[in-house]
Image (cartoon, rainbow, N blue to C red; front, side, top):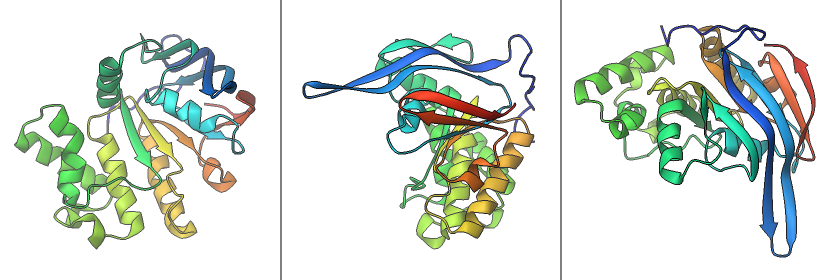
Length: 241
């Protein structure tokens, strides 16, 4: 098992994992104010699978940065797993990222000098896990993503798809509440991208909450709900949790 399956009951009480309330993000560019988010309201329930879509400048990347606690809203409220994180300081946000959020990036972001096992273990090192427990968790996750025989290889010895599987395994190491994926298939060919998305969909079926940003409709189709952004606002939502 990856983690204990989470409920996916959009109408139930107490299962909201992400709640954005009138979230706004304004950047000062010289004398010009850029309203990247203009009052976003959104709820993601535990076990949900959400794709954020939109043209360049729509606010989807800003939204992902806020969801990942890499930035703070200018105004509004962001509650993650029951905690208001809107106004936390940098140290507190760092702790939230380590404990609650797993990241998968388009460019993999693996450390080339480390083996597959060591890359997967990296979040556990920062959480103070002992060596034996970290190794066991890395072996478990390598098996889940189909890389048990590659634990002692380095990233440059792997294909792009295999590197992204390592990145997925690393994102799950600390059992985060939510997995955020930023264009996770952007550097992969279409067939390999489909394989990665099948893996992500299987993680969601096992209970993991997934939020991804993509501009590709065929990738967004894997999600059960699609949020379309335009001009810093949610333009429409397709599907249901």
